[in-house]
Image 1 (tube, rainbow, N blue to C red):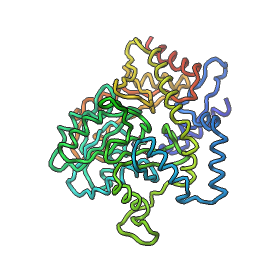
Image 2: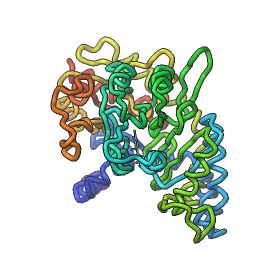
Image 3: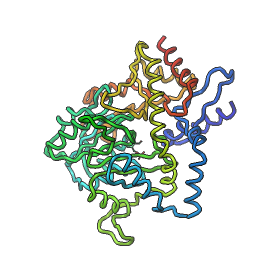
Image 4: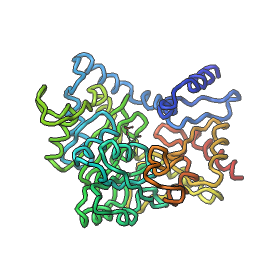
Length: 407
Ligand SMILES: Cc1ncc(COP(=O)(O)O)c(C=O)c1O
């Protein structure tokens, strides 16, 4: 109990920017009667406990060699993640945000250049468009999968469209085959924001394709709470385009392949060797973890089927979901959230405000009602704990609390 109170006060003191991480750092504890179990939204301590020897060995090896910058693990990770994504090249960088920003920078966007992106996503998807010098054009999502709606993308194409950023949200892929056809028709490159969908697959024309395989560039985030999470920030771009990979490697190193020689102005966006070592140690477990997340999700969906007011997540039949999030659509969402919190159950809303309605994009002229599916999702979605270490007992607790709320 004392530890739990300590955790609460620490959370109260913490910066809101740390919220995402702190949610993921707590561990389950029995309540004072020992009857119910608290269920954190994510339990990275439990994950570490399950692979401690691998992680400690990998980290220690980097420390012994003192190879903190661009050590051999970085190239090893690039090769391994590129293979996993069925891409020819992987370029590691400092975050999932930079993984989107660097390819956008390559496009040399200028005033009035438009980049089509969904509004129902994490801020980085469109913040990067602005920071690369372009203007985001927000489009609506498919209300079943929350991934970008290809018809909305097509309707948003204009003579100023320079790129399309597709987000594979919550762990399943967008309808890439349709988006690629639209992009090809208009000669526009596609960036796949796969921050939440490492290794997610989609069956297209009878074969399995992977997130990041089909677009011009695919991007990944290794933020600690991601399915493949580092012990700090990290990201990667995967691509089939050799020229892009060569240029991206320069851009992340101040714009030069050779130290102190700069062909263009880049930035410092290296991935730390320590982070690459952690990620390499986790990689052999990733497929099993994704399978386990699918099993947890199926168990939730079976238990919540038919509960009035609750719509379990819908997987597009062409997709193999990796359930980065298990996201319900519910009635009285905010009340349910308060109810779950009083029962010690972690939950979160991804995302309460679409990017088209963010104050920083007010000058773009979107108004409430501009993107109805996004705005409905903002009011109705709630994500429940889903991770391989979640126990049956914890899951039953979550289901019981949701069912209890809806009577
Ligand atoms: C959809 C999406 N895009 C981009 C990012 C940015 O990744 P990072 O936090 O590693 O910069 C995230 C991570 O939260 C994300 O969920």
